[in-house]
Length: 313
Image (cartoon, rainbow, N blue to C red; front, side, top):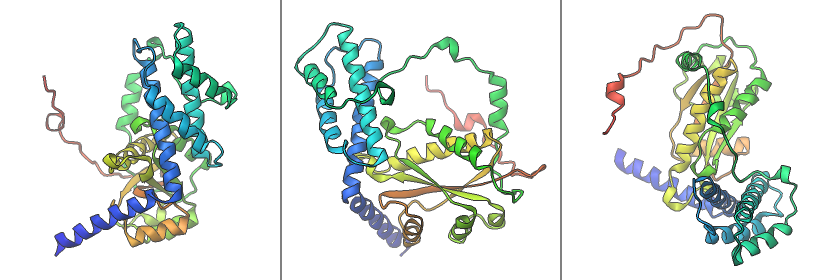
């Protein structure tokens, strides 16, 4: 009976995801995600040592069609996708002009770019150059920083500094993302709204009342293709991991609260209550608060490296 019930929940979850993806907004957001994916394909092609001249023409033609579809949409997400794509296409043309190469598609891209006169400072795609000599850090200090992070469940009950909280959330956006699609969203609940959520969460017995804020981390299912059906979980989880470190960087205590990844009526009511789009699934919740002067935390001993890590030579 338990297996049948689990199977039904999985099927119900997949139906919910498909319905959300096929809604009007879901289709437009999928187009934006595909535009970002194609943009990143251009960026990757331009960042290898010897790009093939005239590469990627099928993707570029898809990008132009997607930009035409999304350009006049007021969604910030879709507008940023267009700016990223226009930047990558501009960089693509620059690369080929420097090598005195042109063909029919390159000429078409140049004409297309003239129809979208975006200031170069507003473009957000293409390649940037980094220097190895600039990538030098105090490794001992960073190692100490990593080792000093703990999951905290005993907060001092005072309000978290919202400016620092926002800085941590923004910095966490540097987390790796599948083809840069960034199918992750974070919802920071006020202290009052956090009280509403605490009663719906499991696994936080004994410390929920001291939490100042809850951050709901969601994965945007419409950002991924059918054969990437669970990728939203991976990207959102990586973001959440980065967030635990950026919160620690700014002196904010935190603890990740797990949840069942399958859609449920309870999650549906939370979505409706807080205005979270239908195509987003909650992956985890992060509880945040301020450190006490002295705090006890679980030892959380890590397994030996021999158990976890294996070099295959």
